[in-house]
Length: 301
Image 1 (cartoon, rainbow, N blue to C red):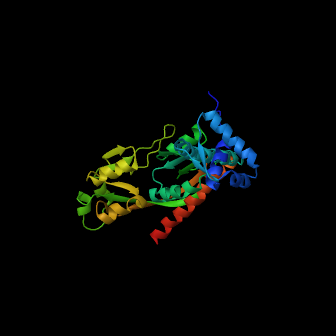
Image 2 (cartoon, rainbow, N blue to C red):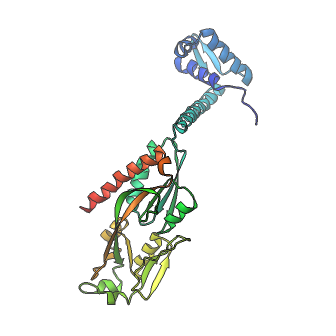
Image 3 (cartoon, one colour):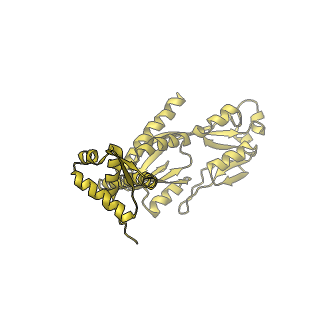
């Protein structure tokens, strides 16, 4: 790799001469002698092979080439400062990347609010987001060490905080036969219709949490797929209430009034995959997630 001939300090001196309006002013701002400033700029121009500045009276002005290079040098200095800040945060244990595993039943609005709030505070931390269903979350913990897992199941030996209560409701499209029923829908009536079930993404310990009373079942791979199939008028399903508000308000889906089990509630947990080694960025994200989930609770009141 070719080494740069010009140093960051030389670019910084050139910026000071231009920004402050002259060599004397730059020397005062940088706490250097004027001769040192003059030598640095002269050496820079010598290395490049052409002038960057012209002197108009007592004021230094950029040449056309100088304007182009100064503009690029500002980005270079900014990136160098950002790199040093990143190195500092890494030295303090701030994670360069968070691996986040989320069960698809987790309220999407709450997750998106937390991610939006996290970004400006992330200090450059990258987020790797993986969506799973049911025991797929347990598989990720057994196969590696994700920083954070949001799931309704907590395996033994892991630290976890309850973070939100998820409400699943039975829904169908307005033109579905179940929506034409008068009064509450019995289990016997429900058995005659097609149920859409979301496939467990786990490979090691797959769990079937569909309603076992249904004789006819279609299985899809995601909450979004289940939503689209049901909204098209094919079958019914239990889906996360938090993700259905717009569809219910617009009339694209309708909540089914069942004799029993029309609503299913369970807790989601924030599981710390690295335990006591959980870093500050992950802990910050969990705090933001808890604040975001509190808004979900307030909306239900």
